[in-house]
Image (cartoon, rainbow, N blue to C red; front, top):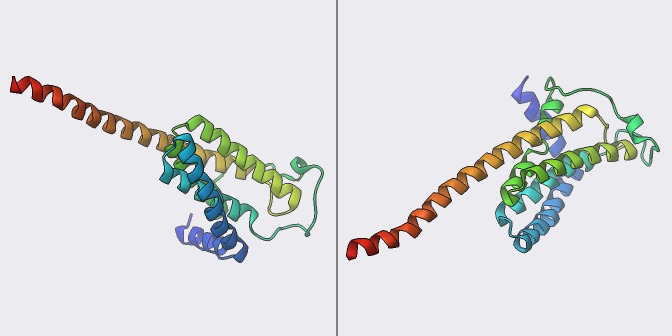
Length: 190
C-alpha cells in the first residue's frame, strides 16, 4: 500500500477536464441546492453545503470521465455487466473507493443529524452509480466498489454521529449552565 501511488491515481482522476468541470458545476449546483434545503428544513447550512460538494465530488469522479466501453453502448442487463468481486483494500482504486462517499456521508450526517437516512442514501447512491456505469459504459460496475463505498460511508456516518453527540452534549451543558446562572445569581443577592 503506497500513499504516493494512491495520490498519483487520485491526481490522474482529478486532472481530467470532465471531472474538473463536473466537480466545479456540481459544487455550485448541488452545494447551492443543499444550502437552500438546509435553510428550509432546519439543517446546519455549512455542513449541508459541504455535503453537496461531497456528492458532487463522488458523481464527478465516477460519472464525469470518459467511458471504458464503446460510446453509446447501453446494456439491457446492467447487473450482468457487473464484476462480482468482494470488499478489498489491496489497490489504490479500492482505497479511493473506500473514501469516495466519506465527505458526503460525514457532512450530510453532521448537517441533518439523521445517520440512518444518510447511510441508506449513500448505499443507494453507490448502487445507482454502479448501475449507471454498467448501462452507459462510463465506468466498470463492480460489487467491490459498492462494498467499499458503503463501508467508507458507514465509517463516516458513525464518526459524524459521534461528533454530533459530543457537540450536543457540550452545547447542551453550556446552555444549561447559562440558564442556571441567573437563578443562582438571584439566590445569592437575596
